Image (cartoon, rainbow over all chains, first blue to last red; front, side, top):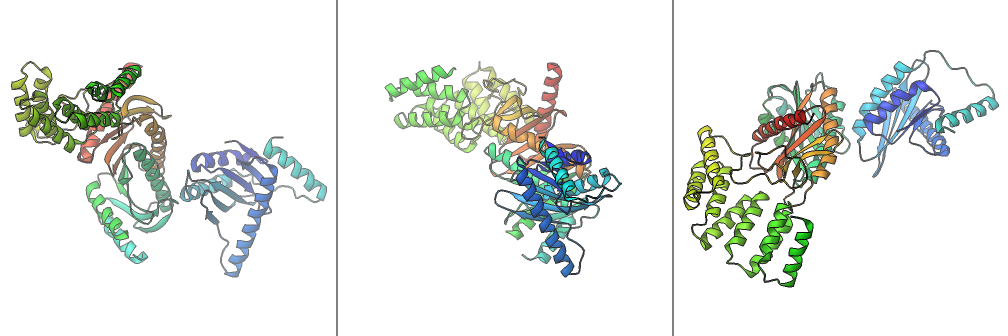
Length: 155
Length: 117
Length: 273
C-alpha cells in the first residue's frame, strides 16, 4: 500500500506498520490535526475530516484525563461491525504525534495495538530532533496546507 | 466464572513444567482478558499473535472440511505456543519452553476451557 | 477417464436407469476424486440392484477413500454375505483391520484373500507390510497395502507410498501456489487450491509469531479439528506442507507422517533443481 508523506522520515515506519498490522487507512498527524503522512485515503476531504476529528477526540480525552487527575490516555480504540479504529499518541523528539488507524476484519485490534506500539518507537527514533519553524501568517498556513495535500495525494 | 476464578484456573495451567505463561484472549480482537505468570513475556504480543494464528488456521481447517480447531500447537526451536478455543469467543493460550509436556498442558487448557463454558 | 467419458456414461445411465453402467460411472468419478458424486451414483444403483456384490464392493472402496472406515467395513461385510469367498472383500477388510492397528485380524483376512487369489501381488505386498508393522507394533497410518496412491489430479506424484498421497497431503510454495499432492474433502470435493490459499497466511503468521515471541524458527503447526487433524510443516524456507488425517490417528503419529512427507518433498525439490 502506498504511503504518502509530507515528512519523508515517517514513510518507512508507516509502511512497516501497515505490512504487519494490515491496517487499511493510516494517518500520522500532529495534535493540531496537521497531517504528516497518510495511506489508504483517496480523497483530500476525507483526510482533512479524519484528521480534524481525530485531533478533536484526543483533545477531548486529554480533558477527561485531566478531570480524572491522571496522565493522558495513550491510545483508544473502537470496534465496529466491519471496521475498527485505533487512535494513539506517541512522542517524538520534535513533537507529539497522533496515529489514526482504521482496520478491517482481516486483522484484529490486538495486532493493530501491537504493531502501533512498534510504530511509535520507530517514529520516535526516526524523527528529526530540530524543531520545525512556526507558521506565523494565515497565507503561509494556506500555502503549506496546499503543499501538504499535494504531497499526500501526489497531485 | 469471574476474573478471580479465571486467574486461578490459569494458574493451574502454569503448574505444568516448562509452561512460561497462560492467558485468556478474546478470539476476535486478540487482546488479553486474563493472564497468569507471564513474566518475561509480552502479553499483548502473545494474545494478538496467538489469536491470529488460531483464526488463520481455522480458515484453513474450515476450507479443508475439517471444522474448527479444538487445539492448536505451534512448535518452534525454543518453545511452543498452544491455543484452545473456549466458549464466549475466548481462547486459552499458553507459551511454553522447549520440551514441555504438550499433552499435559493440553489437558489443563481443556479444563480451563470447560470452566469458561 | 476424461470428463467426456463421464458425460457419456451419465447420458447412458439417464437413458436406461436400470443399466449397470452406474458401476463404470461411479468408478470413473472415484478415480477423479469426486467421491461424493461417486457415492451418490453407486447408492442410487444399489436401490435398483441391492444384491449386486460389485456395487457394494465399489461403495466400500469409495467409503474407504472418504475415510469412513466404519461404513466401509459394513459394505465389505455385505459383499461377503452376498459372495462368500470374495477375495477383494477379504483384502478390503484386511486393510481396515490393519489401519485400526489390529494386525492379527488384518493378517487373517489378507491370508484368506491370498488363498482365494494366490496370484495377486497386491495382496502379497499387503501381507508383508502388515507383518512388518506387527513386528514393530506401531500404528499404521501411512502404508496402504492395497490402496495405491491414486494420481490423476494433474499434480506431481511426490508422496507415493504415503496413504492419501493425493488426497490428504499438499505441498505449496510461499505464495500459496500448489506444487504437489492434493486434498479431498469427505464429500469428495478437491479443496487443495482453497486450502493452499489460506495456508500461505498461516505460514506467515507462524513465522512472525515464533520470531516475535523469541521462540526461534517454527518447526510445525498441529491442529485438532472437529472432523480431523492437520499438521503443517515447512519442508524448506520456501515451501509448506499440510498433512491431514482423521481423528483416530494420534497427533504425534501425524507429526511423524508429516515429517516423512516433508522429507519426500525435500528430495523432490532437490531433484527438480
